[in-house]
Length: 127
Image (cartoon, rainbow, N blue to C red; front, side, top):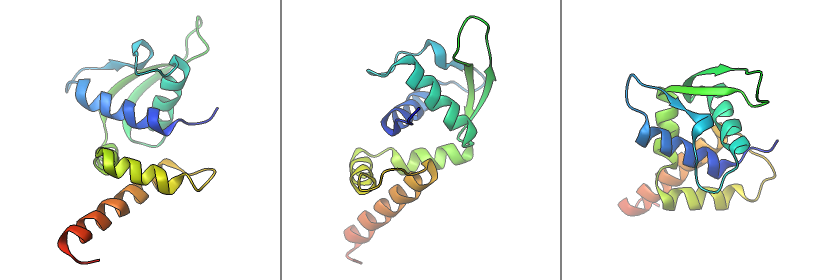
């Protein structure tokens, strides 16, 4: 299955806006944009593997999809969010990355960070 980076971003923003401290968010119950449930759960699973969210992942008998309960966004997850939150930065990042057939979530974060740095340098007249 291919990782949908727009879904990853939208899911992280949703978690940040809707998960209260000390509670859990049940990913399998989410309706997020036009994404299929499988895409949302897969994105959450990969964010968990990348260490961007703390979650409980359970296999169930009645579904092929694991049940994912998000407990928190990790420090690394917040850094990732800070890099991709701004729409202008996200669009510039996607434009840069569109030239490659495959990139990791870490690379996305790094490129977004560089885009932000370049915008700041430009605003300060340093570029």
